[in-house]
Length: 215
Image (tube, rainbow, N blue to C red; front, side, top):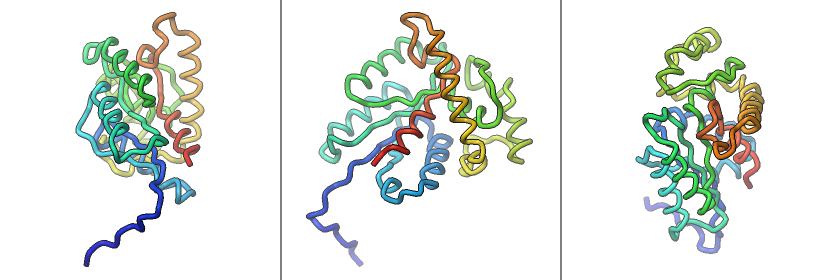
């Protein structure tokens, strides 16, 4: 049976489009959060876009490409979600380039320094400890131990229920992220005051706020 066509008189809806560096953890968490929204209309216009891009510049460029395409509305809101990663993997210059492109085009950035797992960590513990890389955080932080103790499972990047496991601690995580970010920005050196310079920094809280406010 052919699909029913939408009536031609219906106006396309403004959409919040999100591009994630990670293929599993970030989309799984964000889709879990979106599923909890009480507002059905808001749920229908939040889109985790499929992408094969996995660097800051590539994600920003893909978002800009979609922004300029015929399928987007001028009122659409665009976010990219990616990690700072270690300085040896991605230089400050590359992050500067991504942020400059995003700022010029109106694309918003939710960056975690050093990685998305810091956001998960502060659901479980109150910490401001810096980490140099994903491997450093996984190897030396209490994330794995606290996941086992508080959630009864081992941490795995691919677990689809990651948001459900941590949602009872989300208010704590949001409060801690805002405090961390404010502290980092306040103490940042002149010329080194962007999130990719500040370790730790957790921009996911800003994205969740944007989702809550979107209509």
